[in-house]
Length: 77
Image (tube, rainbow, N blue to C red; front, side, top):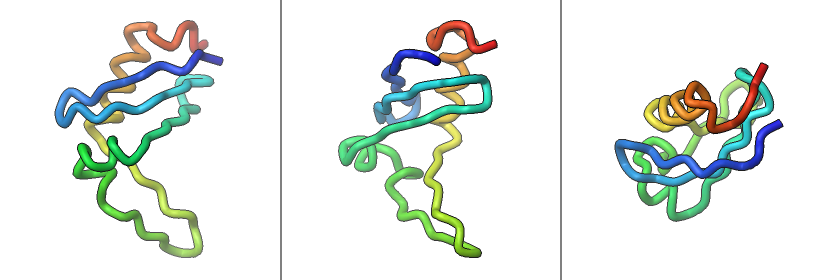
């Protein structure tokens, strides 16, 4: 398990706190300031088929992936 890492999106400068437990298990926390910067996260999510809505931003996901490859979350094997 990693320590929380602050990640900044290279597109909109939104900041989130990320923990990675493995290459496939990631938690992302954002606040109102992040929602005001990111046009993707700022759009209300809509639920379909009784599944809880998920917000995501592909550019922020890319920034998290780059941080993981660079080892900012430690050893994820």
